[in-house]
Image (cartoon, rainbow, N blue to C red; front, side):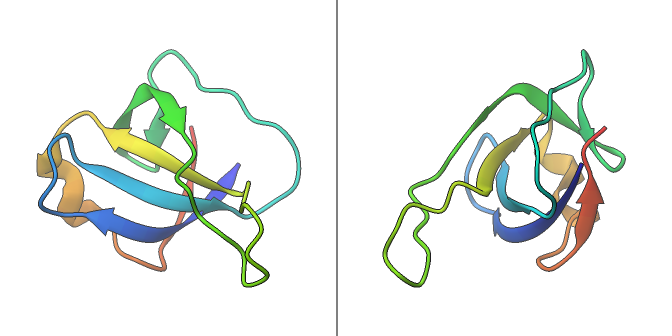
Amino acid sequence: MKFKIEYIATKSRPAYVFARQMGEGNFTLSLLPRLDSVPIRRDISRPRALTTNGEPDFKVFTFTLVTANDLPKLKIGQIVELK
């Protein structure tokens, strides 16, 4: 499943990103999940993102990085694959 990075929390620990699901359908996390080559924790959440109509945006997810050292590998607007 592909995601587009929309926000990167650079000063927060643990480090996390908001990413928008690019396609339709469900996805699952593997035992060692990654966004491209960046390891992420096995738990995800949904931020309180809203659409332009003010409705909840259920296509945006929060992914927590295993280590903040990987933050430079991700850029806003980048398309990543959940592996």
